[in-house]
Length: 116
Image (cartoon, rainbow, N blue to C red):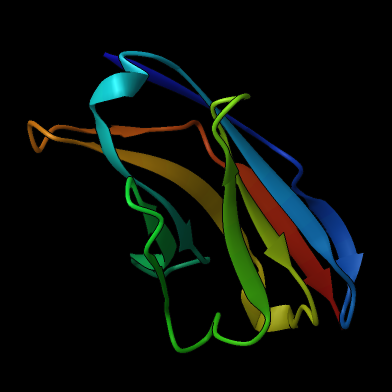
């Protein structure tokens, strides 16, 4: 099993920045990919960005050019740096771990609110 704990959400004005953190513990050696998803009010949960074990990154169209996913292997932590935030980025952001067994684990979510 893998435990994920997110932090770093909050209230920010449009154009501002936030950095989300996701600390992983447990069977971290079996993690194949770490990702950030978000779920806005009344919307489905969507993939924002991911980073594979090999370091390959992916960004959704809405995240490209503004968000950066990175990791610190020594701290077993994945980050999502979010710049130039927009009100439409308001959502609960979830950390996700995909294991080599195809099992998935989720964090509890952290609220990001961007005011106009």
